[in-house]
Image 1 (cartoon, helix red, strand yellow):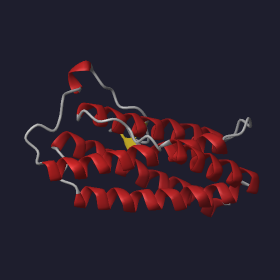
Image 2 (tube, helix red, strand yellow; image 1 turned 30 degrees about the vertical axis):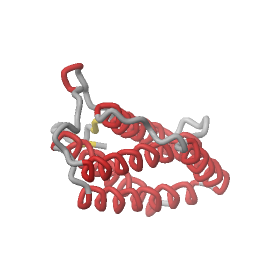
Image 3 (tube, helix red, strand yellow; image 1 turned 180 degrees about the vertical axis):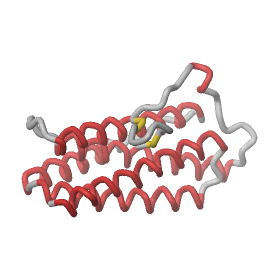
Length: 173
């Protein structure tokens, strides 16, 4: 989750106004567009999985862990929306098979919850560490336009924050 300039205040959802939306891709080569499309679809489906992991780890208990999970889920939902917006700005649609990532996210979230808090945190650290690696590769390998690159970089920083948060909570157990 992106840090604001106000100490420990964290921004979960960034403000968007109508003027922020634009059509993208004109002037890009077909090869670059193919890479961008693949990258956006990948990020979109992985964020669906991430939000479901957190969604299915949340219990009815009013605990700090659940508060953190709710915030992380909401943050992942914004990432999902970010990439869906970009897909449509380029004139593309999300992957038809993204429902499979919904199931994977449900499975990781639900079953780690059944195994307890330590398993939940280990799952979160593992998944977010993979996300950080994947984001880095996509930033390196895809010729993003400036606006899309900024979104990918912002979301990468959020994922790094998740790794740090879950790692600290895991150490505290």
